[in-house]
Amino acid sequence: MTTPTLTALAAASLLSACAMSGGMSSSAQTGVPDAVRVPAGHSVVLETVGTGEITYECRARKDMAGAFEWAFAGPDARLMDRSGKAVGRYYGPPATWESNDGSRITGTQLAIAPGGEGNIPLQLVKANPAMGMGAMQGVSHVQRLATRGGVAPAMVCTAGNAGQKSVVKYQADYIFWRAAS
Image 1 (cartoon, rainbow, N blue to C red):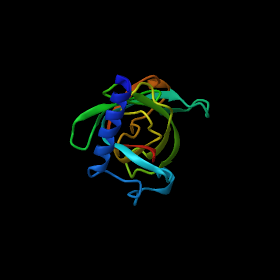
Image 2 (tube, rainbow, N blue to C red; image 1 turned 180 degrees about the horizontal axis):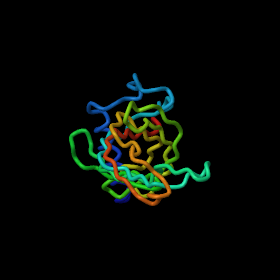
Image 3 (tube, rainbow, N blue to C red; image 1 turned 30 degrees about the vertical axis):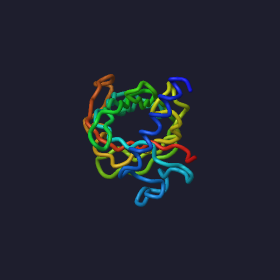
Image 4 (tube, rainbow, N blue to C red; image 1 turned 90 degrees about the vertical axis):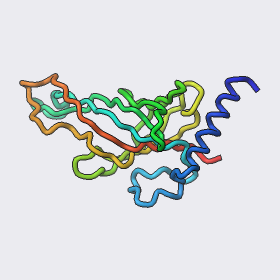
């Protein structure tokens, strides 16, 4: 086998081991709203905790002339495994999850569910094929669960402060899934 193939196999084995060591299994989605559950036939590859910031910008609403809103401009978070070791980053736009090995994925939101008062919603994302070999290879879905904070600012957004940015802190679990083999 070639070195890149061996490296990819080693990374996949390591991630599978991490997922099995106290991680969430595909049957352990109890309590997760139906809208953001991963379809049957998938298993956890990696569990992370994302801690960082979400930037919002005061912008004119596209659907209502003369009205303004705090619009999502993008996230920037560190991804840590369950032991607290840094394993990657989450940033955007577009929403990108990048492993420390350089592999990364983007995705398309499939569904959201309420995350509780003052928290951004829970989310289910369909991953695009990974760019680069490594930990993100084969990831099919990403779940955002256990959200804390991250909602748009409560301050007024008007023509007077259009273009102003506001950064809010947040935390969420990001669970990475792949089709079971």
